[in-house]
Image 1 (tube, helix red, strand yellow):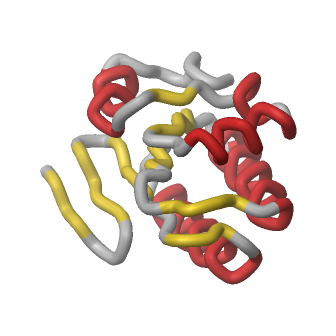
Image 2 (cartoon, rainbow, N blue to C red; image 1 turned 60 degrees about the horizontal axis):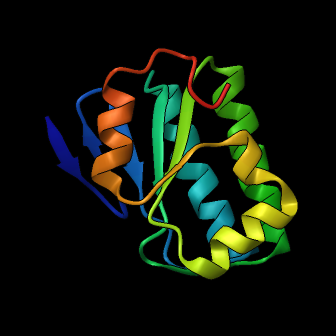
Length: 122
């Protein structure tokens, strides 16, 4: 089943989230709320696709870390996809690239996720 709704879509047992523009406090909090909603629904596989994200600031990074912790506490898996060069560098500097696998495309991340239990990124 594929369901597209307000910046996210469900692909089987995985949800793909599409944060928009500039991830700061406001946009980060929206992303966190959407993610929490899916966790509450029992979805534990999350791909965050950054193809529509210009940049993630320090507040956005801290919110992403909180999202990652919540997903892991729920025994879930999170992957990143479609990071721009600037966001790859930001994530490398803050250490997120060591915590969460990143894929060039959403399709690559979904393919990896389709065989994932809770081992990836955890």
